[in-house]
Image 1 (tube, helix red, strand yellow):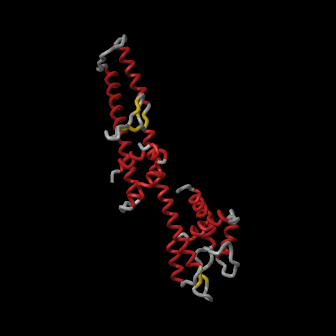
Image 2 (cartoon, one colour):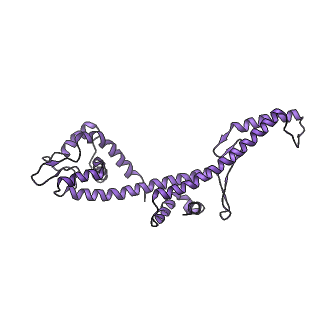
Image 3 (cartoon, helix red, strand yellow):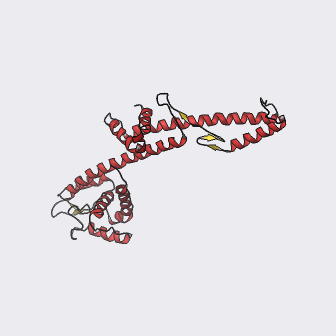
Amino acid sequence: MDYLDIILKGYFDKNDRLHLTEYLYREFKKAEKEYFTAGTFFDGCMDVIDSWKKDLQRKIFERKNELILWLTAAKNGTLTYDNLQGKTIEQKRLNTIEYCKQELKDVRPDGIGSLSFTVLLPVKYGYSLSYDEILYIKTSIDKAAELTKIKSERKYLKKAIKKTSKLIQSDESEPKATQLKKTYKSFTRAVAIYHVLLAKNTDFTIPESKKDVYALAEKWINPASNKPLGKVSFYQTLSTGKNGPAIRLFSPTDLENRYPLDYQYALSLFNKKSK
């Protein structure tokens, strides 16, 4: 996979450059069809960024060494000058010492002193990249990786929600209920996802205090309570049979401690914009 070519084709296209995150996401989806994982693809893109940064660091290192050599030679009087520019050798020596000291004080990611470096690209691209341009590309890669993660989570959650709702609405055995809890690890997160969707489409309001969350949790796990909040209730209990004992997928303490955090996670997930 030629990650350098992928990145630069997008960056030097006037349309894709403005939407580089979306471009990189599309390129990942192409690579995914060839069995590349998101980690492999975006790590490969970041390797390109790392190589550019190393190139800049090498140039800075070389310039720094050059300045140190000049400074040392000027201090011990062994530096020669081709053009004194109307100054005495001593004046030129002192000026050189001061110049080198000032230049060495200002070391940046893209340069040192009065010099800023760029990364030279292969001839076929005919350009060089500044440090700011490299940062823009890096940010776009990070955002594309995050976008991929969000879309993947959404796809998984849709399947999880569908599967969970079917299980909850049917009589299942205890092993199946136990497996459900193991599958989703944090059942409170599934509840939170459902509530975010519910809050966006109805006048349902999530209680804010832990006390109120705990009270609501008591209703969720009480088989004798009225059916709350919707046709598909993630918080209904599963039973071993129509007359069997209820199986709790989580405890009130779990909800009191974990639900507020899971709800904030769910809210941030669905508030993020993605196509």
